[in-house]
Length: 118
Image 1 (cartoon, rainbow, N blue to C red):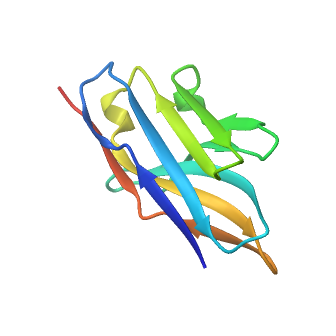
Image 2 (cartoon, rainbow, N blue to C red):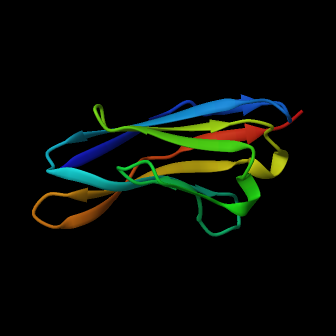
């Protein structure tokens, strides 16, 4: 069993910054890609950013130049630094990890709310 625990969400004004963290714990051999998805009310869940164990990153076009994803392989944690936040960034942000044990399985965190509002 693997647990992903997210933290760092909250309310911020437009132009502000937040940093999300996601820590993985439990029994596993390794973790492949980890990432952040978000889901706004009435919309489908979408990929925001992802990072491989080697540090290669993928960012959604809408967040390039504003968000940065990073990873610490020692403590199995990823971070999402969000700058220049916009109201359209408001959503529940979910952590995601592809975990290798006997097979590879995708796990999700419980989600953390990010609200960007004056």
